[in-house]
Length: 204
Image (cartoon, rainbow, N blue to C red; front, side):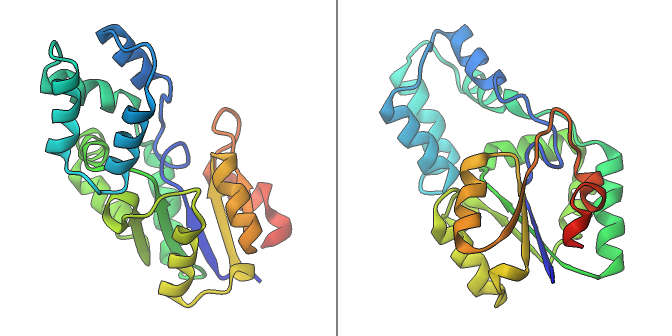
């Protein structure tokens, strides 16, 4: 029996353009991300470095970059948050049939852009729907590492067999499956979170 629903954020609730950041950086002259850059990005996503340190890394490595260009390029991935999805999670929260958790790989710049995009009022409406709201840069853990899932289980005293996890990234789903979660590797191109109880009705 499913007692807890765990949701990713990007391309589950808020729409993303995952190619946009690479395109924006390419327009600045970066055609590929080195291992050093990938490591910095991961450190930023897990809150091991600050926004200032993250931006300074790029402006010092590429002297022609401005802080505004780095921020704008980095945030190009963030699109809109449809109201119908917000109403879906609000209605689900009001029913109080499940524990609701958010588990997202994200960072301070992205969250600032999300709030700017959807408004602080709507962001707080969304956040208030959850019994736990976990962002990687705040808890210093990230998917697909198993420790982030173990953290959730321990923090909420959960049985993985009673948890249902929704994420658009197969690598994240695979880790959750190994731990014992029920999962949905949602495809944002033709699936929508509001159809959860129709598409996965065999579990509910």
